[in-house]
Image (cartoon, rainbow, N blue to C red; front, side, top):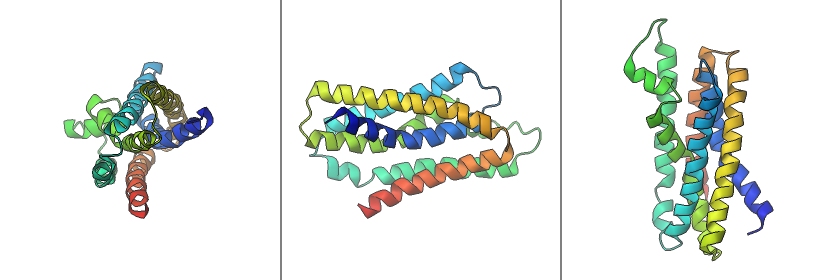
Length: 195
């Protein structure tokens, strides 16, 4: 596979992570460089690993994975999005509910793990398709690394863009973030239904 093709595939794969990174930037109150690095690393790492795992799964298992991957992404992103909207609408001035904080804090490791996996399911499918081209181990490791680096850079930038524009909207930004997550889940679901 040519580098230019892989570059554009990587950008396409990174768009879901970019949207979630924008949402994270909306929500983080005191944004620091290490926060954006953490978010970028989570998304970049999982895009890289999932593309390699997809290649390892190969074409023999593609029909089984494709049968339910969109349901997983739809459920994870949709439920987190609905929860974000619900909590933003019911939030009181001094709300300290611990269950709310896990959805409120985009730096929470558990939440980041769920979001990183959910947004990298498409990378798994790309890895499966790369196996159909007969890519060798070195080629797929290089491809995974390129996918991961591009996702990291785009997600890292997305956090700062989200912070810049999210502070203008406050509560509305949280609702918009929830809607974005739901729409990403729906997009993944619909794309797999139309294939």
